[in-house]
Length: 353
Image (cartoon, one colour):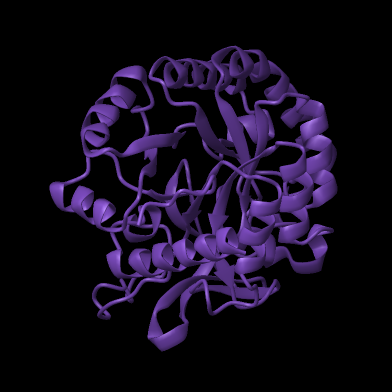
């Protein structure tokens, strides 16, 4: 049964999929996909090539991220190549629009997502985890996947919250005219994990309701809004000021809610692990119910599914979470199928009620 709801369910998939990948997406009954361009790939020709691959199978590309810009430390910290990176971002947005793709997720973290070693969740499936008291952390930024010791600086010095706000304002005002002229909507992803100071850089902007509110007031654009990652927001617990359903309601009513990352965790910081949608501390139906109430017409995608299968398939010897099976949902097909089926059931329930 095809989903007729305004709430669109999509999978994040790898570009240049195999026939088997396409077949799997179609078996799930999906109409939409989202993709990420690798470094150096985010250009008009690459976007059009992907349309030519997916569209003959009646699969629409809803949005395209850009690994060369996502979590770019030069934008967050005002490094010496900031203006060049801003021009690269503008060209990417222009090419996206020219290719007929009108959504992009952007994350504003200087050193990407931080994790600790994977931990077993239900049935032994492995989920990404974070323990603030760990001695070693795993990050995957422009320098690639690596470990960092507790207390070590990522960028040679400490940064203040005031600096980060100044840098965000400079960046968003520089790219706003291009975003609006292109017709592309940009959803800003929360800091993950939220609200901490990691590697000497505070995660102070996209970790709280008031931070998002201030940032979107600075941006002052109908095209700049939120990619609300439910899992990240659940990580923050009470520190976020408004819970995930309150965030969805508030920004959904303002037409600033563009995309939802559907993810659940066992508990908030200081130590959490990601788990199955029906196995965390959040009743995920409450999110879908609010999306229906605010007439949400964006997409929801499964995000960071626990890795299922044999110990070899789970990558149990690799403590990093951010490798291919996690980044692209179709790679770990069993977990993706479970998540998509669960999400479809929640959407149908919300529509029936």
